[in-house]
Length: 166
Image (cartoon, rainbow, N blue to C red; front, top):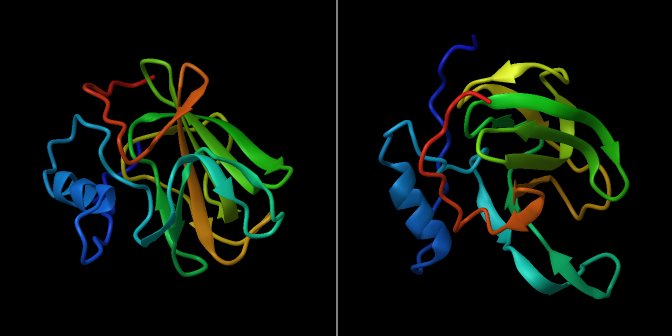
């Protein structure tokens, strides 16, 4: 089992936002909720069903949250689970996916390096990758997605009532 590491929280902006609310929830270290982002940084782009893509110059969905952080910043698992994918995906660059309980999968894209292998079991706070700029990217950041039964949901609004080992 991996050693427990303090999960990172979100830096809240000066205005009240979903990120600020998430940062407040993250201060409560209850251990049984899925309420943390996996990297410390500033929210650069939010979940949206339609967003102007900065490189492709077309409107398309952005089904995750982009967290800007320095290249090499450690990304940690926000909940216990099993790593189901480590590899490259078109546009996303280096990607990791973790299957959690209750049909939840988390996806981490644009990574610089993977720190864990496919098939590994992780605990909340386990370092899994580093921030990079692989794939279609405007700079170092983590693109973070939460999928529930295969459908993306807003990671800033998603909260799992109970987390168990998958």
